[in-house]
Image: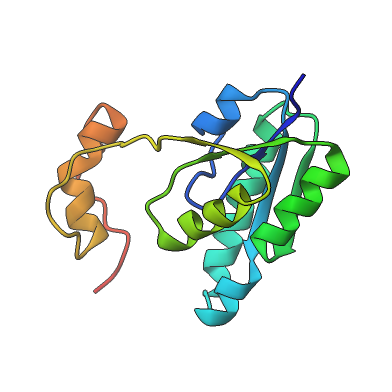
Length: 155
């Protein structure tokens, strides 16, 4: 019998994440990637946003073990697996090179199952401003057009 864990990374924070949905009884870990944060600092409000998303996801899912850690993800995930007797790591793919590098490092010692990330919308252009991107893609993502003429920023 296998004992999986799910690594929930910052691009997969959602109770609808495919790795989470596919493993409803797995232990779940989220790791704040300290080496990456030291290399490229992130604003506090962004960290708070991520943490709030993890907390909301953890409140929503019924998985028996849920932990947030900080440090080197490879080390923290390996330690988590050892502590909870997990023999597989399940994760949703992410095109981010750092995430893929972590997955490759984990594969050296663990069985890693990677799920495809779900595409919410088709958008061929390079987005320069979120508002223009959202104007063109909101209906694909939400299934309806959100209310128009709402100003969120002054200027």
